[in-house]
Structure formats: structure tokens, C-alpha cells
Amino acid sequence: MQVLVIGLGNPDRGDDAVGVEVARQVAAERLDVTVLEFDDPSEAIDAWEPDDSVVVADAVSSGGHPGDIYVVDAIAHKLLTGRWSAGGTHALGLAAAVEIARALGRLPRSLVVVGVEAKHFGHGTPMADAVAAAVPAAVEAVLTALDDADALFTALDDADVVDAA
Image 1 (tube, one colour):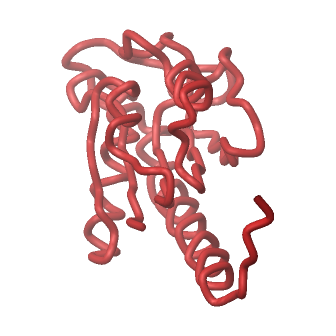
Image 2 (cartoon, helix red, strand yellow):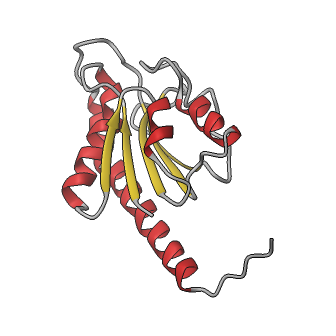
């Protein structure tokens, strides 16, 4: 089992950089976590294994207020395509990539998505102030998801589990 943080986005496209920036800050704080960056969410499917704990940080485009933060357990709940769609700079949106992984039986055992509401995705534009200001809270949300997953999987690994099959 490995613990992965995946930052999605393009650092050169305005608010789309937020997922990558969150992942980079997590990497500086948690040396025990593998941090990856992808521009295309479909690349994440090959990055994780079924027994991994994964947190994905990405920009969200749902019409909310820039800087709003959303945290979703993507194992228990489908991602709303209106939020995690190909509306940013991704050819295939995160919601579609997660559902492809679900259909293929390729989801990790834990998958939490931390999204930051974004608005501007223009090439060469800086991240909006409201989105940049949300980065520390998004980093905290990722760290909390990692801590929660660690506690859960430590308990599961320590338990006497009987295979009912």
C-alpha cells in the first residue's frame, strides 16, 4: 500500500494551477507521501493500485465562488460531472476518469477529492487571488484526508479480518 497525493492541472493556465500547487505544498509537509502531478486526470488511473490511499487535488468549475473548497469521498459518492468535468483544461474530466476506473475495477481502496472552485483558465494568466488564498485551506483538507485514511487503514490492518468468500 502506498499513500498518494495527486495534483491535477496546468501551472500555466490560471486557476487550473491550484491542484498542482496544493500537491506541491503537501509534498513539502509530508515526506512520507508520494506526490504526483498530472495535467490529464486519466493518467491518475495508472498511478494508483487497488490497495492505495489516494487524495486528488484539482480545480473545480461549478459556478460557485472562486476559492470555495469541496471534499468528496469518491469511493462512496460519484463526482458530479458539473463540477469535475472537462470544463477546465483537461481533455477528460476527473469525474469521467473516476467512473472509468470504477467500471474497470481500478479504484484505490480510498479516494478523496479536494476541489477548489476556479474561474479563469487562460494560458499565461496568474491564479486568481481568491483561489490562491484558498490553497492553505485546501492543503489542510488534503492533510486531514490523509490522516483520516491512515487511521482507518491502520485499524483495518490491525484487525483480524476473515474473508467471507
